Amino acid sequence: MTAHLTPHTTSARVSDLEAAGRRPAVEAERIAALLTAGDPLADAVIAELDLHGTPARRTLDAGLRKGPAALGEQPPQAVAALLRQVATPPSWVDPLMLHRGDVVSLSVPPMWFGLCAVTTALAHTYASPAAARLLTRTGRPTQTALHQLADAGVWARQAIRPGGLLPGGPGYVATVEARLRHARLRATALVDWGMGVPGLPIGQLDMARTWLGFTLLAHRALAAVGIDVTGEEERRLYQYWAYVAHLLGLDGNLYRDVTDHAGAHRLHQLLDDMTPCPDATSRTAVAAVIDAQAHATAQAPGAALSEEQLRALLHCILRKALGDSAADRLRIPDVPAVTDLMPLISMVNRETRRWQTFSPASAQEARREAAEEPEPATEPIAAVLPLGVAFQHRSGVRRSGSPAA
Image (cartoon, rainbow, N blue to C red; front, side, top):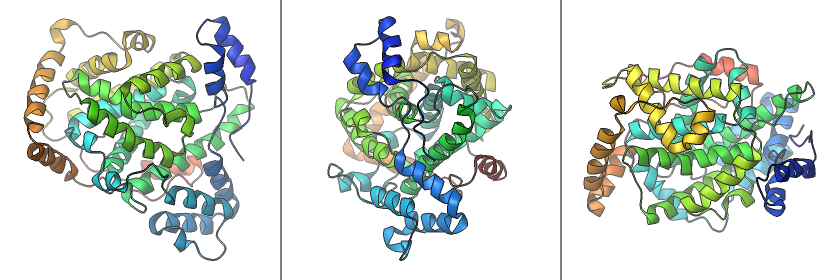
């Protein structure tokens, strides 16, 4: 089973956009081709795992952690093809970059990375109604949001660590597992497709939204609290996350020309034009993410702000990151100036960051401290399980007492 069913033609969708005066035809056609595109390699793996069961899952797990050489003589064809693809870095990848990790994100204090980057990335993803529908389908959006924040935070921390994306590394394994979870969700979504549910959740365009959430939107959120990056840091950030996109199975046409925030902004505008406006489902999902993050952070040891204060802070951050127009569509409140903590927080963070980046030695020390945060807990591959089983598995895993993101 693959995720390439098309409920409308590309030309029909483009005609709708042209009628609304939203994008030129040529630019729209280039992206519209991906409106119902999935990830053929990962989609084929999910079908193969459902066919062959436990032996195929064990082969996949061994190949992820030990490389294609661990596959044996007659591995499942789709599993072997996926593992060969992810184990072979593109020619443009700098091996030293992978050993260093994402030095830009590692320079951000872990609390702010979770509060700003992870929350904003999920909120931006769920601004797409098709993706939001997956969160609210359980009937317990806040509880599901807690799991989503935890999963996204664990994955991101593993992906940015030095050596994390080297073959067999924790970030490498977690990223391919995330890719397979996307494929599992697509396969499950196709069951609903015939019942009139619009949109293909976690297709190429939604995956690109998530990628932009951890790059452009995350750093807009961080800038809102006084954590800015230089032009050179932007270049390094997008070089690193281009490889993350490769491992996630993102179409190269979406990310290979994006080398800085300006390029990411152009892609972001184009995707917004191709994505339906947020609906009630999106608003419910984003509100659940905000509530879950505020609650989890307030409950963390040493928390200095109440849950109400953290919720107001998140509203401010998201309005800065997403923009007032998008925030209004998502019904994210505009916090009154008298309760706005952003100016004070920004001043403190800018002063702290100035000293952290005062010299190469101080910058290296800041990254070392971030990298030495306790290693996030990992779970067995849930991506290969049927969706209901995967949710049951995650809800039964006891997590640490650290903030959810």
